[in-house]
Length: 130
Image 1 (spheres, helix red, strand yellow):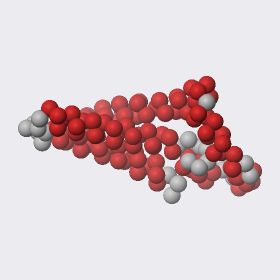
Image 2: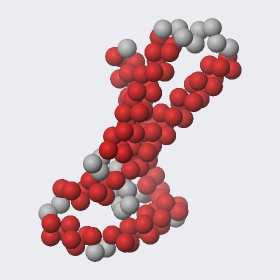
Image 3: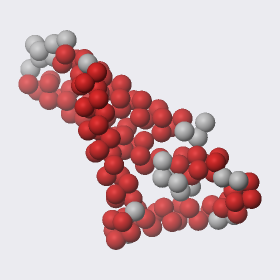
């Protein structure tokens, strides 16, 4: 169940790509003004990017994120208990990684940079399928 959040974010991103491509493929936005088209593209662009960002972000293996719980499910019990003793520090470590720019540049930044690659890959995959 730990993976339900990231998986739902990924699926929402993919389904949004499909919906956007279908809107253009079947000409449902052909008669719309430039402003309406821009609004549709902006909405879907942010929605897709935000969902892939949440997908990647939630897979970071630090508490309280889903990635931590996913990793914990695969660890042996003795190691899981040792790590759980230090789980209360996860939020502090996470905040340090997010708010201290040199740490963010070598940890969270590259991880979140994968969002762009995932978005491009899914976009190409959807356009190939449709």
